[in-house]
Structures are given as C-alpha cells and as structure tokens.
Length: 439
Image (tube, rainbow, N blue to C red; front, side):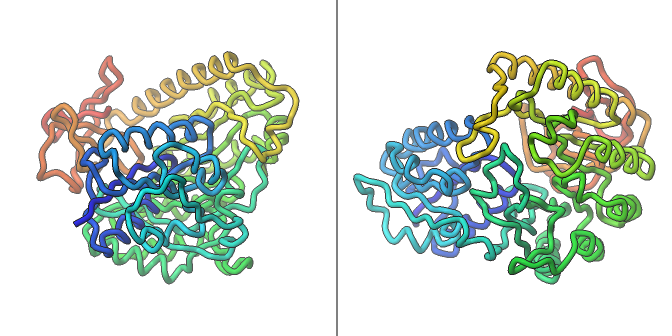
C-alpha cells in the first residue's frame, strides 16, 4: 500500500480541504500517514496571504524530502494557483495543481515517476468561479471544519484571495445540513463553519439564492451536534438578527471572530473595506448587550502603506478601548497583483515589526482581562485529542482554553467545570477536575 502525507499552511478552510483530499487518497487505496513517516507522496496545501507563507512552502518541501528523498511532491492551494511556474522551479517539486484541479489530484497522479521538470495543471481562476466543491475535516480533530462557502467578491487592496480562489460561491443549505448530520453521526461534537467570506454565503451560479442567516437557523436544528462555531465573519455581514439568534440558539456558541484590519477610517478607505470603525463599534456593543460573556476576536493589519504613526496610535487606542477578547495581528506584506503593492507611503520593516509587537502585547492584555472576567463562572469544556507534557486541552463555549492532566477517557467529552482563580502565570484554576486550569 502506497503512503501519502499532508502538510497544511494557512486557514481553517485549507484544513477542511486537506482532509477531504486525504479521503480521496484513502478511497484510491493509499494509507494516510504522518509527515515524518517516509511517505511515497507528499501533498502540501499552501497559503499565500503573506510572503512568509510562500517561504514556508519551500521549507516544507525540503523537510519532506529529508524524510523520504524519493517521494513524489505535489503542491496545491492558493500559492499554487497564483504562482505555479515559480513553484515548479522549486527543487524536488513534481506536480503543481491549481484551484480547479486540486480535487482531481488522484487522477493526475497516475504513477509516482519523478520527472526532471515539475508538471503543472492550472487554469485561469475564472474557470472555478461558479464551481463550489464541498469539504470538511474529520478524524484528525475533535471539532470539524465544515466548508460552506468559497471565493470572495470584495476588492480589498491588499488581498490576493479573489485571484487565488475566485468569486464568491456557496453550497446549498440542504447539502450543508445533510453534511452536518453525517458529521454528527460520526461522533463529532463541534462544527466550525468556514469559508473565505462566510457571511456572503448563498451565491450560486453568480446569483444570490440564500442568506447566511437562513443557514444558521437551519443548522441550529441539526440533532447530535453540541456546538456550532462561526469561524470568521465580516462586520458589515454580521447582522443584528444573526447576533440575536446566536444569543438564544441551541447550538451556536457565544464566540465571534470579526476582521477589523485597521482602527483608522483613513486606512480602512485605502484598504477598500466595506465599513468604517463606527459600524465595528456598533457590532461589538450589540454582541456584548445580548451576550456579555461572548468572546470576540479581531484581525488587524499593521504597516499598511500610508499608515502613519498617528494612524497606528488611532488603531491602538480604538482597540484598547473596545470590549474585545484577543487579536490576530498580521504584519502587512506586499503581494504581487494587488493595488496596495503600488501605493505610496511604504512603512519600513522595523516600524512594522514594532507595531506588530505592540498589538501582540495588547492582545495578551485583552485575553488576560477576558479570562479574569470569567473567574467564578461555571463552564462546559470540550476536550480535544492532544497530549503535550502530560496535559490535554479543551475549550469552553466562549473560547476559553483549558488544560488538564491527560486522560484518554476525556477526549471528545463535555465536562462541567468552575473557573476559580487566575494564576500569576496567566492560567486560570478550575474546580471539579484534577489540576485543570485555563491556559
């Protein structure tokens, strides 16, 4: 039996697609193995949001060939769609598949003969604009990442995703509900909804046919799933009706991840975002009004062209005063074929680094304050199948991470605990389980 191994870079959507590709190999008679297990085939699913992701792809190829020097290496994902010729020149790469071809990977790998030059199968992104391919992860995590939407119609000036994944398109509500029902039957207790622009769910064949809110209501009725989490949603698409429904729903958890990107209206305009910060403030206020314990995560980019010192301080002050729980901080990276790459007012690398560091410190402060606000409350934790230094981890509904002594019986189990004290090292002690505490 031939062996195949995977390495995934980037977002939750990529994880769902890697898992689906893995099942294609299993159906074809391959054994899916760990990356270090000297596989016959390595599949690297790439991201191209930042320059670092491109460099990481090259590094992963080298690592794969260390474990299995004669392995057949295939690159898929966003980087593969954007720069197939560049990837084909990487030493050791045997095949590159674009966005329209990656789910036909088993068909393209007819044999494992390594050729002097990599084979490229890649079409223009317009070829996939109306073609939604379902995907979900299963068997590798306690939670499942369920892809319900792909592509994006938003022309943000810094982003290559529309070029790498095409226009916005979605599955049907019926298909998503059926898939969620199948996932529930497998024993998974949490589903994370994923997509490129999740709130834009409902476009098929270039026309809007459903709304994300309708999908949310339908999924809330799926029996067997304990939790459903919304991975990320644009503030202009997060309506009050969605927020109010989540607040009283049976399965949707009090956790939103809402991209901001900048707290400066000037920079938001340069980015061509579809809102200004007042709207963001209103969304956070609405969430906290109906779900005081809700966890709110924020994406923010530092060092965008034209971002002055005052613009950054504007963002910092805005985030510092906002009732949010943590930040995902990205350092702006020039990407070819984007409008921002040609803008004036370039910010130096050292300044970008300093601003990133300041917001990471702020994120730690925000997370600690959020954890402190949960002290004394009772929570339900879903434990995951991981083990590190004798400990395992899990999450409360509102995304507080807990840590417990490893016990295989607790994997994929819901346990009731009480958060009792925030320790000096930033962890939170809880009752009802031995040595369980928030990490």
